[in-house]
Image (cartoon, rainbow, N blue to C red; front, side, top):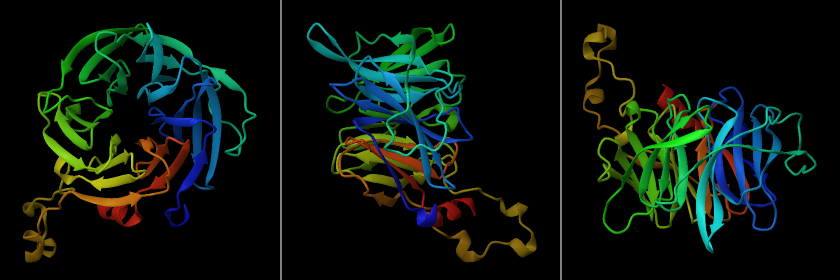
Length: 343
């Protein structure tokens, strides 16, 4: 990608749901869910060819309602979960379900982003996540290093842990907990970190991003980041967990270097005993201050609230962001930071 220029894809409908196809580690592929009150909603399967800057796509129908959140199984490329609106007793409740995509749903050929002539296929329902006693679902997140059998859902201020059984055709509530704090917490987004033995979770609510330890979720471990606007989404980088993305209502995407929560906060450490005489550390290196949490870059290609950001599962230096007007933007981590982390 020349000069790390962003690549933009436009959807016909409004949208706020985005996820990488997590189990796909070869192709750069994202799934985007739409929000339309008038037409059948869709899931766009977006393939990005980073060598030629070409986007290919396919479209699936999601006929049960507006998609508020979407996530993909880490073990099965064909399985995903959505949170969607459902009207019951004159009330609107955001529900969640697990689906399977048809086998021929992968994008083929080099379709242009504005080509709407491709045939739309329908999803197969596997099971519902019953949240009637806990409130509306904000998101569903899969256990990052698991076999696709455990998911966590956030409903208002509750965390619900589900076991998916019988090939994901049945969801059993294994445990639940309420997150407490000052005021009435109501989460908008959350993510399990794949590091720290999967005990670290980042959540977004109000204008703050908070870090939590799942072994004691009564209070946040740390407030990671403060915005002047609503934070809608937060994502760890799956390979370098100090890289954290957030999207907010001020149309901005912020990439932060959060070394305080990193599994390797000082990079790869080498003991002095392992150094040869020629490799002895210089005095200034020994006394160097540890790195501090900081904002790396702010991206402003969007013109509406950014409701979703996520990292590619195939390329750890590439991420996508989605604003409510249906604009999907693909960006990369700045090269200088990439080389600094690697070298």
